[in-house]
Image 1 (cartoon, rainbow, N blue to C red):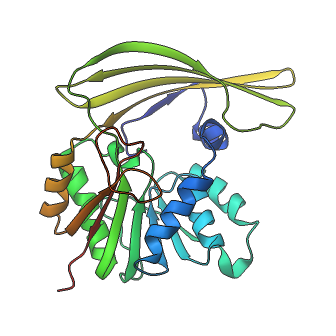
Image 2: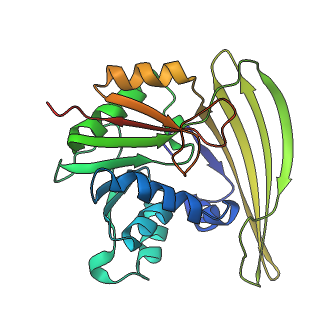
Amino acid sequence: MLGNGVIRGTAYDLRAETFDYFLPDRSWEIAGWARLARRYGKHVVEWMCNTGELSCGLARRSFQVIGVDLVPEMLLVAERRASALPPKQRPHWVQDDIRDAALARRDKDVAIIAGDIFGQLLTRSDQLDALSTIWRHLRPGGALALTARRAPRESIPAKTGIYGPSRPTPAELTLRKVVRQRYDAETQLLTTHERVEIRREDHQRHFEYTYSLRLFHPDEIVRLLTQAGFVGIGMFGDYDLKPWRQGAREWIICAERPLT
């Protein structure tokens, strides 16, 4: 996270270790990112990569991948995941801040920001700093692809849900997440409080986590990307890369660095 999240109870290591269990299977998503990336080349940077599942998925498909994240605990999980790959195929992990990162080479074909992660950048200044970093690390003609969450026009009052893991867990591990969310249409902020309860046999731990995500309107995303110097902005409605339409399942935005 970029400073807008607060963990209470235990540390980031528990969040990193349980992060993927609450995500749905990502096979379809990873295949879609691969289809999109192949239009531009094989050198990919995944910015704010969390536990590196997408980065490793692309590496398995013969992309040369760098995964960048600010949180060392997330990158430790990413490194463990990558250990299942042949050494020459593994992504290269970098701990850095997307707002001012400086990688060794700045000639990448594709930059990816997946999930709701772009929304962790709450201010226009942070958003533009991140887009400027991405622009500098792309070759001319390279592309940025990101997903964003659309902003509802009306506020949504607080509501609470209880969730189990979306993926199989080891037999000795039991997980439960209690989530409370509210959305403010004026600020376009979705504020979430999570309590994750972790039980291994007779030992139980938990952490609580509060964070905000900035949601976006389509015209706002176009203005941001244009201001950052991107062109050729297009939108897809799912990972089959069909054009975006109102009510589409996903919101995937692709934009290019100009050739000159």
